[in-house]
Length: 158
Image (tube, rainbow, N blue to C red; front, side, top):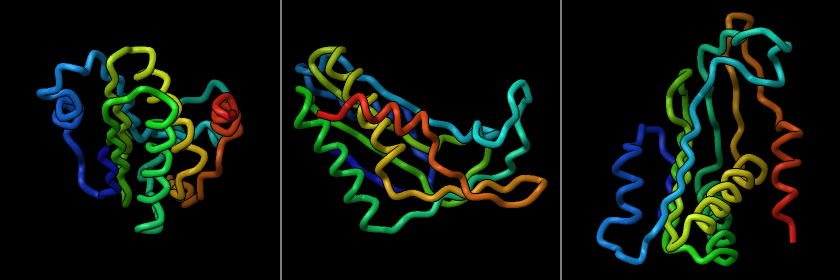
């Protein structure tokens, strides 16, 4: 299991390859790459293109954030038959089109990998202690949690 919170960019291909390299039991790797977009759905009126987000700054509590991400990954490992999990989340100032998060899951079978990857991402959006601030031409604003993210996470409740 690899859990990292970092300011530096990551190498998507290298991170995904590290999950299966040399392990003949891996039959599937599912991954999710999240990118910074130039608008936020809570702030962009319907039918309007991006609202000019210049930068997105992510803040977190070092130590606490990594423990939270580790627990989410451990929950996935306990729920599905997984071989390995990687979660990398960037913090600091990012610009639109830059990668912000990678969730990658290795398993023997695709169904397990897909489900676990979706679970981890849904829980990252709702349980991980990150705070996001957007900077636009109109000024700064904190990004609030989306109701759709909370709703997505409810499907995993047992």
